[in-house]
Length: 396
Ligand code: ADP
Ligand code: MG
Image 1 (cartoon, protein in one colour):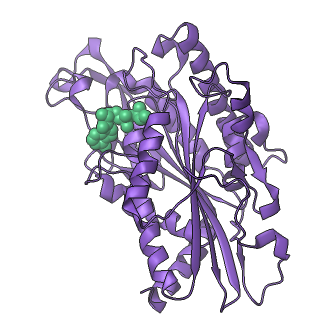
Image 2: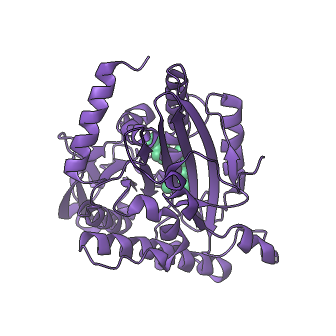
């Protein structure tokens, strides 16, 4: 049962969020892993501070010796974000700070969460996670939350309709295996659904009707996502992901008795690795991929730079990624950036780049988020906000 107190708390929360602007930046430092081959007791290059909102990155010089043989510290930089998760923070603790964004989508906002960082820094672990147990990540936990909420609101006369889509953005062009399929690009073209008023992007192939209370259905969708993922081998990590993966949950709700309707969207984005060319040792096809990845990541940077500088023109159309996320990244949405960081000294320069980009994003303001809601007292053009479903809904 959704109690009055809960409703009041959310109203207050949304108000506070509006006052603070609509971009949040969280940083998460992963623990050392056996693959890192760090000596026992090695000090991490990045440490979260006790305040929960800042972290320190240190550069060490292995030649000059230092405490515990890890090299003398030659430079330190401190960064502050809305939240910094230390390596000890588990999936549940991270989701506890994310669930308010999921709730915002249920309340009728266009919300985007993306994980940014070099390959191996923990992006997929954060967004997708593994298994159905405590290591499950944000997508399955968000689905659980949405499912619970849907059930409780249905008891109060609300009808919720949901659909999910998976989109892989690979080489800014086409997905692997579709190299000779000319129709593939057309089918995966990103379109903004202008009929709906709130411009939700739709792709013909991947929009699936979904019941988040059916765990089997959710699992099948996650499996589908795992299979669609383009995985290649760079010298950095065998599990390197070469594509951006965008999971979107579209929600439409209506309450006939109250004459209310709302629509929200939740984009959960696992970005491709942000590492630069010189470090990944890529050549040939891999080099082309890395360039394309860099292109869309730099387009994302350009968008945030324009937003931070309050430039009149924001270049959303320079990449598929930014075009897809435009409704969430523009003034009316809410954005959460998760910057994932590896604790190794080897990753120092990539980590510093990620932290700098994150603090740039931290300076952005999107303006006032707009709730896509219509109620009996509001005069909103019917065609712009009805809960009719998109014409391109396809079944599995
Ligand atoms: P990315 O998607 O950024 O390339 P992954 O999410 O695949 O990185 O993480 C690389 C490895 O590190 C995986 O084996 C993952 O399970 C592990 N890992 C990442 N973050 C954590 C964490 N916070 N706790 C435990 N293991 C983690
Ligand atoms: Mg990954």
